[in-house]
Length: 383
Image (cartoon, rainbow, N blue to C red):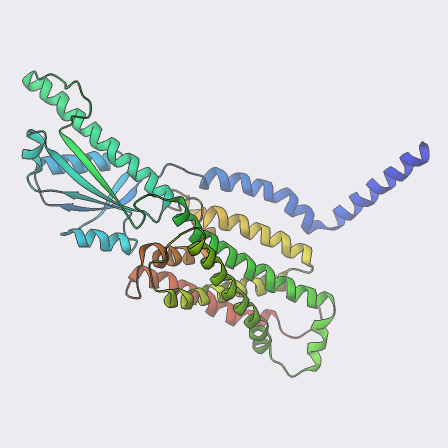
């Protein structure tokens, strides 16, 4: 019995010593739960406020102004721009400038007085959480405003409140653009594509490079005339091909199995996906220069996966996040690829879309920075 206890204590002591020596693993095990706590607390917001809204006011009277004030005073909507047509409302939503559009017909005050007031809402169906918040708020605020008008009329004219609460002096008709049935899969599939591509690229190339270094393959490169940039591009190209194949495979099942329609140009999408894949592979190369073994690769990849899920806009909207969370999310290429894939796939936006190219420009910036820094970090040398 004593010998058994001694053997048990020896194993425990050995594992404790190994754990204390592997400081990187110990730090990750202690820090990641705290990071998860703070990220979930600040990013997991299901009710979105201050949703940017475009206004097309054809009435320009007291009734329309009071209605707009009712929406802005609710804190759910902010007037981001005023337009002069329905097409401009749709264009603003296409470009990502606003998430909702309020269309007020002419002579609203007169129609409200007759109990025939009606306004229209256009909502961005490519953003699930914003859609849910704006859809609910659009109807509730109009009902509250209508009740206020009824109470005011009762006080002034001694009217009787109607028995049917649906008989309001103003109603709203809500149109969901791009996703009229509010199907979750149309929101989920583009995000799944982005997360699969990013993690496959990062983990694949980083693990390959570190494994090669562990097996001594990096030392053999010292005897060759290959340059650092040539070495980097040579390692990246096979993974670009694999990622593009993975992209086609996911979209094949997404379209033919799950029935998610692809509305935009698939060739434009492939071109922009190539830029995203290249930037993700560059991050994998960067990680490989910082990690000393494959275990550390998995730990860093898990942290990036956590940031990607919570801070990129994949699951939760980035609008209500604090600035520090937006900054961390802004360091991930996936944050800029998600609006691209959702814009092309769900909205069907084309090459002329300004918001599309803003995100593409950031991805180009990622690629340029990585191409400039990686050769400096991965020069042929023995560590």
